[in-house]
Image (cartoon, rainbow, N blue to C red; front, side, top):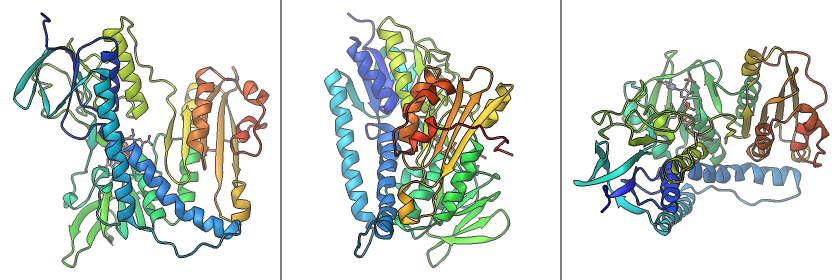
Length: 457
Ligand code: NDP
């Protein structure tokens, strides 16, 4: 007779929780996962996947314009139907929910629909039912954070923007991170009028400065009203319908929706974690050791709830490591170094490794290779859009420290170069690689002369 009902009880069926559960079951563990919402978590339901589908939908506008301007096409009347698109998008998300369910079943993982709470280090409760497990995995993700300003309840977050019944004509986006810039591009492309407010002097803090300002220029050209050193201090609803946003400088703006894209908070409330002895940090995230173990030996945590690097592929990696550590006799610490990422802004940012500022802090001499050019396609369309590529090299060792790309396909390009960086690629090896012509990516293997000045000045 087993001592516990399960070997692993996972709370949360998002990217990390599902991957860890399936893999653990594959290693022979008896696994259950509890989820009180749709399977697949943020990424599948209100994150990466529907966001990328929206990017595709919004980008059609420029493709049609370009076809007419540069490639001899005559396009008839254009109209974007928000309702029709949302229906298609929702159908795809439902299909993916089903895929997740089938994958879990096929792996032999028991799915419990309901909210789970930790009762003690080996016991969880789901809708009044107590279950025991040798190990409990908390993979509950994060939720959008809304600043505490008067009238904040009138605004929406990324959880709601995917389900709006109507396309807002005028939108104010608050924030300057991934979600804010991505939705500024999406909604502008779909035809909304977008004002983006960012409290600091330049958005996308933490990204390479050349790309930050390059993206700001491109977004402005596409019609986004970007306002830096600006913020919303109060929201109210006017009697005749629109929202009124009071800005930090005392001016005000009327709009149909305010989207708060002001970060996310770990989902640790009402889970019984503190009572069970699980330590949380100041942001409410679960503190874990390098193996993702919490301060309680039998309780583990992965993904956004630990607030390490909050990206789906990182949560998947943490899940793989955990399942191997616990049930495959192969202890694995997740490796959080050199994680590439993309911002699906318009144009896209793809990035891996150090920014120029970080590289200069860590190395005596940094060689900066940079190229700015108009994509070939736009030589015919006349569109005023510029791509940027930047390669940072440690002068002493010739090692490539960082690669940053702004432009169409940047995410696809950087994924490949991220492998090279992981392998310790040198500038000489990039130079020895033959380019593929004509592509934008070939620039990265044909950058010959370092720029003689600090581009971030
Ligand atoms: P981010 O942490 O990326 O950005 C939050 C933004 O909101 C920052 O610009 C921040 O400013 C600003 N902000 C924070 N608090 C306030 C406040 N009280 N008032 C005004 N502004 C504020 O969060 P997001 O919500 O954009 O995204 C959450 C996370 O989800 C990302 O960090 C990322 O990990 C993940 N994600 C990844 C995507 C991808 O891979 N493409 C896409 C979307 C999300 P400041 O910089 O000054 O602190």
